[in-house]
Image 1: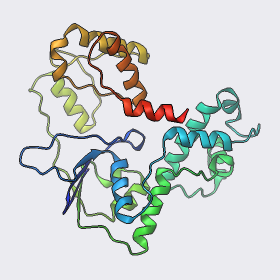
Image 2 (image 1 turned 180 degrees about the vertical axis):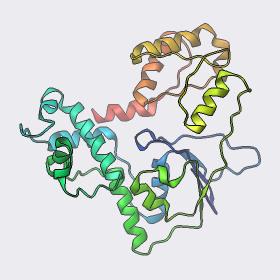
Image 3 (image 1 turned 180 degrees about the horizontal axis):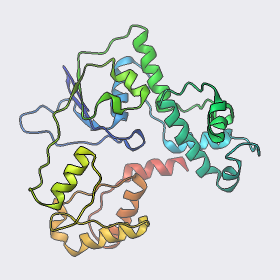
Image 4 (image 1 turned 135 degrees about the vertical axis):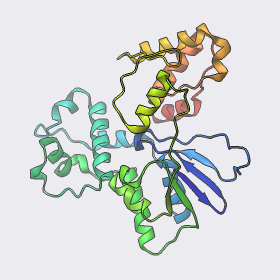
Length: 284
């Protein structure tokens, strides 16, 4: 997404809410970089909260999980009681993830008897206890309430990389109150006839990918995060002159930290997620 205001530009890349992270982005030649941010839905939500005078402090995931861990009682009748007994932290994290997804879908909690057992317990049980640290859905409800009370946003144009219909229901309610336009369609830039071009076309058109690697792209798969990090570090170590031209995308922050450790052991430049490490340490 890209949000243009009289003061500058806010660009927000569409991504799943649980993987949204603000980052800087080089500004194209001839385009102003005043008030320009790049990130996910969290960046757009933070902008909305700032404009509407709402509390804009996003809680850390570990804070919300810890709060739910303490709030969940030991009730053997719950569908997830065994999971809580085996690994309380992991079970609470999974329950919180599912609850957040339901709330973003604007779940009314309707008739719980129509739902599976785990959903019934999520609806009627202690897993729905109100937490001190707000969820993304709670923050969106606060934005909607502020707009409904008569508050207005500054003039803006929000350019979406993906259509509104592809976002969760609660986000759709918010986006419909913004001045939204569609982004220019993405184009495949890899040379014709290459595996990389085929992969780009499959991703853009959401086709099933049957990739036959060639000189343009290589594909490696493993179920082990450690093995994946070691492989990437070894490949980079074999050709250190090309490091400056490479881009590494990690699926989550923990994986980035693990990859940094592998790179550091080989005395290679690291990505340096130090702010994240500090935030994790502060939660312990």
